[in-house]
Length: 297
Image: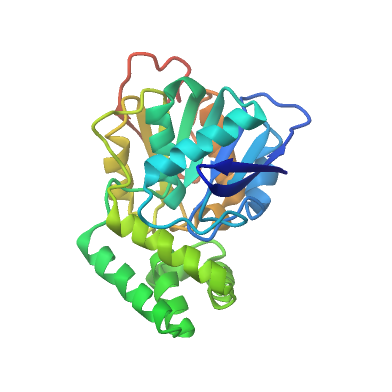
């Protein structure tokens, strides 16, 4: 584990080496409640293919609370600083949910260090109805109505209407509820600041398309970062593909980690994504000029 400081804020990282790496190191940037140690089965699957670098950015895990006046640019620059300190000059980015905005920003600001990028469960901006619902969860949190807060927050992450169609859907829902109900006072402060950051800032700037090959995906039943919203985000990239994963929703990394790892590592290696039974179609969204080695089929 490495400890870092970025503009007065503490952050930490963890680099695990692969026994037989075949692709560039994978930098994993997680969602709202994710820490550098919480990637579980997905990280183990990735390690069969390459080194894995996980992070607690300011505002996450072992990092300090990060006030919401700081936006995605600050977090992307913090990540770049952490990569410099551990000597990763070039890597693949894998962003999940909240972490997709940070990955996207780093790819824009430091494109020379990003080989390829995979974004899981993303959107260009938060729809108005979701903003209202997110503010309601913060009201519940401020009132310490933790059971109601937990239920309302999990509704973003788990599609209750299709839970029977989602692999491990009920188990994942129970896990998330336990996680919400066990938040410490510091966790609550971090979550509030991180949610307000989403509401206060435009986390993505699509005016400068990332140039490297990008794969965008989510579960077919995702009702938060819906397939349509993910496809729209893919369209902001210069060289991009989109696919949906069957029998999953927003919590795809927990529901289908083996399949997500295969999809991701195939893309990062420039291998064909054709014929994967769990993919609901593979769409070429944007065609860049330098996309040699991209998915075929």
